[in-house]
Image (tube, rainbow over all chains, first blue to last red; front, side, top):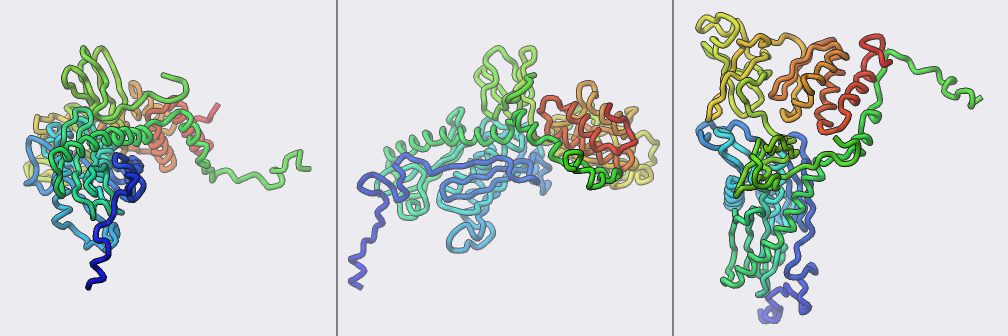
Amino acid sequence: MEDIEHIEKEMKLIGADGQRLDGRRFDELRPIRIEAGVLRRADGSAYIEWGGNKVLAAVYGPREAHPRHLQDPARALVQCRYNMAPFSVSDRKRPGPDRRSVEISKVISEAFASVVFVEQFPRTSVDIFIEVLQADAGTRCAGLTAASVALADAGVPMRDLVTSCASGKIDGVVCLDLNKDEDNFGDADCPMAIVPRTGDVVLLQMDGHLTYDEFQKAMGLSIDATKRIYEQQRDALRRRYSVTLEDILKESPPAAAPVEPDEPSPPPEEDFGPEGI
Amino acid sequence: MQSSGALRPIVIPGEAVGGPGLKPGPGTYSEGGRVFAAQLGIRDEHEGLVSVIPLNGRYIPQRGDAVIGEVVDQGPSHWLVDIHSPYPAPLHATESPWRVEFGDTARYLKVGDVIMCHVLSVDEIKRVQLTMQEREARRLNGGMVIEISPTKVPRVIGKQGSMVSLIMDLTGCRIYVGQNGRIWLDGDDRSAAVAALAIRLIEERAQAVGLTEAVRELIAREQPRGRGPRPS
């Protein structure tokens, strides 16, 4: 028993040089890559890789809301399903909705309901599906960021994209965008989402405790980061849709071999031509 | 239009598309005197009205639209028609071109029939009603229906119907284009397939320059020899 007492209980999350476990500084984001329009069957879709997170988002709608009694004669419903794949975490996650994913689905759908022009589509629903393929803390932020790109890709009218980021406290230091170890062994985590154009906060949660000053600092870090993420979201959409003439010429019909069953191909000896002889 | 390089830049929801003095058109909204894009699309300014032409999205019925629908249900005095929109669209028996006795709707249109009809009215809670009283409204027999994104319909039709008549002339098919993104094609198998291919090309390259030429080229190449106009 006594031997264990000597083992360091606390994990050292920030080194003496101010570097975190993965070498980031306190105000650095993990690398983010967003791609729009990755799924063919959905009306809109996006895929995001945010550090170790891999998340797919798909959007359908506006479409007829089912069951019928849920329809609102004045506005569209924004329904969201956040789901984690069984293989997204190291211990297999039992499939199906649980307390946590139901809560996340609710807060995300409310965040989007405030930016989508719901009054334009009475009696319909806009359905958002977020599938977490690999989780590494901050999946709700990654999912929300991807879903917002997917919504724009689906052509759903909205006031602005929604951008999300989290900050937290590890080893008593307020840091941006915690990863899995920092989230598990840190002191607090505070995900938030804003409408970048107006600065409206559409999602704000906190796990753990932050003092008022720490909270202010965390919000400041997150808001700064959302500006960078917002640019990446816009860039993903631009890449998907801005096709230049060069691209069109490159891909245009000559690539597709014409099918001409009526005409038999010329005899092989003719292929050599006069030079071949 | 430009002859080469990037096409017209796209705008993203939330992007400013016009300052004070401009009126917000479709696909935009105004806030604090400025106009912002509400949809992903291409900015368009016309006589002080800014609008965003969407690149994607569902079909929202509007009064007077010609649409192609599929009958999905029938009642004693109406049919329910799927017009590829978020809203169910009933066609009342009195709006059909026939004199339908009460309870006798199945004699005229059955579930699964495809019709060309018009949107009679859409109210503020988007209740849609259809009509078949227009001259071109009819039940469509034979042929096939293909679906494209409703936002690409204007490109398939072309200026004053130039694109769709080009396809009809070159392939010899009969074509109806519904505003809801459904297109009905009728002709012999080969030409209908070629016409469908041409429409797919337009959908894919809707924003491209020189689309008409690309379509003409595609049809000339795919068209079976000895039929249709030969490339001169």
